[in-house]
Figure: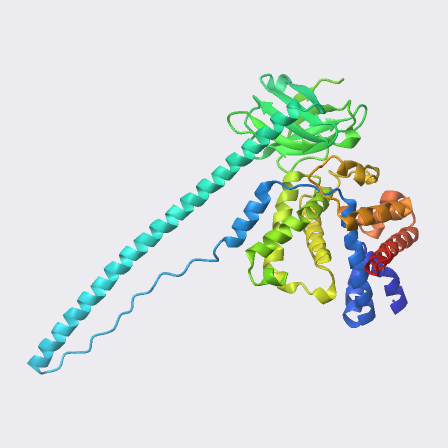
Length: 273
Length: 178
């Protein structure tokens, strides 16, 4: 390819839209072409502006907390100290010097023993501190999960009381007669919550999947979730605009990685309006 | 960014607070899943923390660097989830971003954002559509041509013209024209 042809393709490269071979040729060309590199930098600046086409959105508070905790995490632990052993020299013929040497050796052994005991105590204390830190970390993590759950429950409650909220009841099918769920979503923001009760515990290789089924069209996949022994779950999701207000909400059991269209049995479904 | 590369946690927190809305919006638009998007947002800022040294102000703005990291992480996650086809959202849905913006009171509308959204609206529909497919769904030119049913050459020209117009806008702005 000629230099001018590469120039033509720079805009596509700036949004990573070149196909494999062209992209490779472009990378090789860029290594040797200053003017194309400069041009590309300008185009990448322009491409970054496309980010503004997305609606700004507010991430959960937990993201910031987790981020700050993650960057404070210490890197590795210091290795345990190794004991120094100094070999004793063989005894000489002189009795006095032998006794002196014996005394010195005994003192040395006592010193080593003392150091060893101190080191053991220190190691045990350090182990205890590490264990306590681990427990604390674990408790903080659990507390965070509890906080997140609480925030989610508050959100669900607020949404159920909102005047813009639309509410649907989901009834268990023959597969799960005891199951029931409430699906509530905000018509403006399309933010949705699903409150599930009485679903059987999710098998290890499966997951439940939410579906939005527009009238007469193929189902649109929503969030995946799992349920533990208590049969309950609270899931936040987004009600897809293209599903339309008359869509049926259903839940099926799918392989753990999810399916593009429902394959497993239906557990819960709202009635068609 | 220099402060971050020297391990200044407060500088990272300030950077997060400043860009979290736009970056989270970008990642969410790519992944359509809040949980995954929050995870990717955290990963992106961890990368910023660890690789702040790589940022070179001579090569571009910090905004561009951050957006590039966030987008590339989100597209990687999208491919990992193998869910490109699961979460295809019609391009039409995104034609009026300012409508959705009105609902979030916490969301600040930046001056630059407003300017770009207006400029995007002024782009011919086909140019905007092709650019957004590449940007938010990570599609290549061939995939875009297939998706839109247009000849490859046409798609190339449209994307190029669209991006050139955005670049002009950026230039005008830095000259204080816009």
